[in-house]
Structures are given as structure tokens and as C-alpha cells.
Image (cartoon, rainbow, N blue to C red; front, side, top):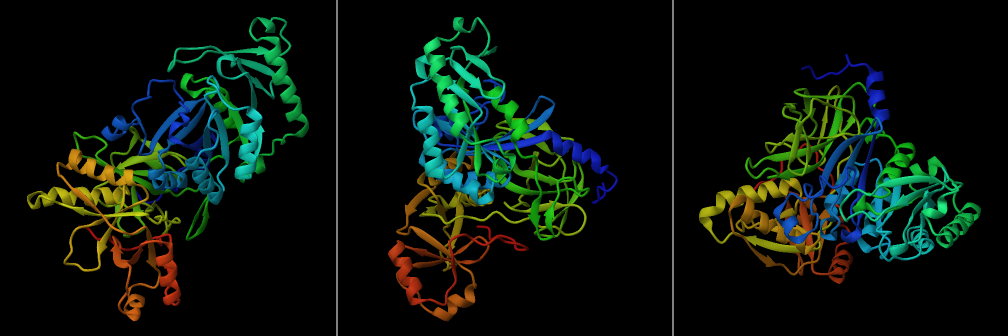
Length: 526
């Protein structure tokens, strides 16, 4: 197949783009999950054995489904703060975000942190206040917290009637209907019966005193609350708010109905050639996630590609921006946990999985036509560092394979000692659980034991001007010079005081907290 897609009708691509919406879920681990198809896929996203043991998600998953003649791509993210970098990368592939909040706990630390990433990227945010059928805080208190702590205006699309044991459902503010909640068995689909506020039989379903309280609160919202403005939703300054109980799927359908009307379609993306429109005739996309061993039987490696423009077609040939090589994209798949489905085509907003024979890195651009490179996805500064020791020299081959593949997928950052005689890699992570995952996966997926030896450092800074600027300084005391997998100098510091003292002593050195994006360079392998 040719490198050009010019024969494709631009209107066909535009029609496909207009049908598509995608969103990433951001939440604290306990906030729950919005499920698009009830409970049948509940366990498949947590495919990794360690996830099953701990009952948490530590990798991102993707689910595409059709709803009301539209195509929705749902990017579920790890809730645990130790895996926030995986969430950052997933947000780079999203056009919208859903902030999932526990009605009893309100905003939690991880949600706040991820909200800042959404704000930085100006991603529209929809809020789903979950677990309304359990004891929780007052709805106005939850809204006030969002507005005061996040500086985000709220617009409730529906409003709860009661909470906990007295939760009866929600009032749709625009249709003026009540959506009744029934106490389905946990994990089962809740029926959503709609009834008009003017229905004479309303009292059979909802106690008058509960309904009156909700109607009075709605009057306050109508008088003093925010008004719907799509431009403010799109720039991330106004969040539509929904109430429900995702465990029973109550409120998910009304959310999706409104989401399709209010959410941002796949948008243009910034590149070295300016903004690239989704309906462009030329195909383009970028790698935002890599994952090894999703299918333990085949020891596969998968690259997740966000399609940005044009039409993807099975077996098409594309250019790889970082290396300049031409690649044939065979065996494309839709992936959700361990479920696979072959993909014949895909459009902007979609996510496809490609077999990765070690060629792709996070942030790589794939394209047809003239040279194109999207903005890269930066690596964030790690806070925990450990030597990774291989106690069994005879297992070095598998040890090396495991370290290189886990580094490739971004499970953890890998650094190397400046002294090349010291061959043990340094694991650099945001949280301790990341390190545990690496040793667990080395044992279970590659059959090798590994020992961690903690290092006394808490901060890393990249040296922008390269090794020559390090040479000019001469000997460096009280911190450690290492190199990342792209052979760039990194300095490790014991604490903030250590860092500030170093900057004071070496004002000419340009240090960066976020690793610069790499282009045209092959990584160091163990």
C-alpha cells in the first residue's frame, strides 16, 4: 500500500470524526469506575496478575464501543498515585476527561494532581459524582469543594433526590424528568425508569418531602448557578456534573447521552508543521503507551497508537518520524485487557494496538506524506531510586530482556551509572509500587529474580547543555551524575537543600525537571 491516502474522500474522514468522542477517566483508586457495558467486562481490564492481587489498576486500558450511532473510545487510567506518569501519557491521547469523584470523600489527592494535567492541556472535564446510593456529603458541599479548590465552575446536569438509603434517583434539569433508581444487586444493571415531574402518580415512586428538598435546591441552582456555555466546557473552565452509582450502572446512560452532545470531537494536534486537522487526507498518529506481555502465552509487546488524522488501514505503510524508516503496520488490534479484535481501519480519536518488535518509543509519530512530528510526551522527574541487582549471572540474558522491555514501555525510568564498569541499571520511579511491579514482572514474566538496593536520592534534574557542560564544572560533590537511556546527563540530589546548594554553586548549569523530548536517537540498551 502506498504512503499516501489521497484517494480517500476527505468527507468520509470528516463524517467518521464527527461520530467519535473519547475520554480518559481520572480518579482516586477508591472512586469506582464508569462502565459502558454493565459488568461483563469488569475484570478484564485488570489483566496483570499483580493488579488482581492488589485489587487496583496500575496500567491504562482502552475500550471502544458504539453508542447511539456514535463511537466512543474510553481510556481508563490507573488511579494509584505511584502510576501517575502512565496516566499523564494517556491524557495526552484524550480529547476529554471524566473526573470520577466519591460522594463521601469528595476530591482526593490523586484527582487533584490529575486535574492539573487536564488544566495544563486544556482538556474539557466532565464530573461524575459516584456512589450516591451510599452515605455521602451534601451535593452543594461537593460542588463548593470543586469550585473553591480547583477553580472550576460547576454545572449540574442532573440533581440527586436523597442519598444513601434514601437515594431515589436524579432530576434531569433540562427534560424536567425524574430518573428513578432501583436497588439492583451490586454489580448488576440498575433499571432507569423515567417519569415526568408533572406525572400525577409521582408520589408512588418518590416521597414528597425528599422531592421537595431537591426541587428547592434546583431553584437555587437555576437562580445562582452557572449557565451552559460550550466554549467554557471546551476550554476546561466549566465542568458539567452528573450524579449516579456506577457500580449498578445507574446514571451512566444519562451521562453518555449528555456527553455526546457536550463533549469535544477529536481535535487538531500541534506538530512541527503547525496544527494538523483530523480530517486531513494523510494518516498520522503517535505512540502514547507501550505494554509488554499482555498475552503471557505469546510474550507479545504492543504499542498503543492514538490516530490523529486521516484514515488508518490494515497493512498500510507509514513513516516512523524518529528513525525515518518505512514501516508496514500489520496485525493491528483493538485491545481491552486480554481481549483482542483485529482492526481493518481506524479514524481520528481511535486507539489501535500494534505489534512492537522493539521499534517504537513513547511519543513516536507515524505518518504518511511529508515529514511530520507531533509534540513529544515528556518524562517526569522521579523521586525514588534503586539499584536493580541481578543475583544470578546465568540469567543475565532474560534479565537484560526484561529490563529493556519494561524500560521501553515506561513502566519505570532506567538510568545508568556514569562509570560504565558498573553495569547494574538504576530504577527511577515516582512511587515505591512501581519498583515492586518491576521485580514482580521480572520474576513472573521473564523468570528472573532481582534485588532492589535503595539509593539515598530524592530528586533528578536533566542537564540541558549536555556532557560538555558537566566537563566544564569538573568534579561534582554530594550528588551523583548518571545518564538516562538516551545518553543524556542527569544529576541525582539527596533533597531540595542539596539541589538549591548545587544551583547556587553552579549558576551556569541549565537544569530541567522534565526530561526533554528525544528525536532521531536510538536508546541505550542494557
